Length: 153
Image (cartoon, rainbow, N blue to C red; front, side):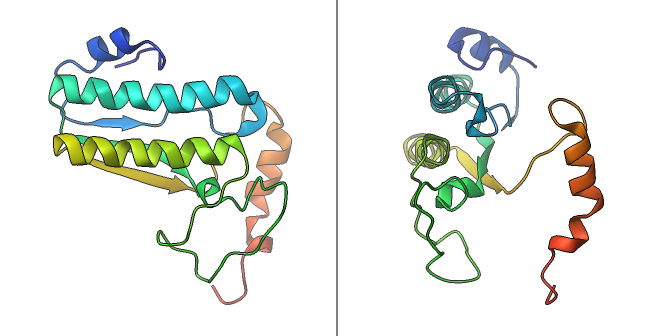
């Protein structure tokens, strides 16, 4: 089912009869304007969780991002506190995109505590398509990804 992410009523209608929700709709990076991105990501995710609660849906998976750690779009670069970085590593976003992902994860956790619904936030590292802006760059990046792998892997 499809619905506008920031339209709570269309989300409720779209989730009628659903068993679970996979929420992959947030804006995937900060390059679309911070105000629109932050509002869509944070409010939209809250509306998805609200719709799940209203419909009695007990399972929600949502797209988060490794940007929640704060390393990717940091204005003041810093090193991770330890390697390998795992889900226990502190989140230190300096940008609104990373912050929106942290807020979404915390919002999902709050819904889980309140309703008993199972939520999972997947910290995706890269989402690309071969269409849209810069298709040649993306294709080249995917074709040469072996150059970026650590020799120990």
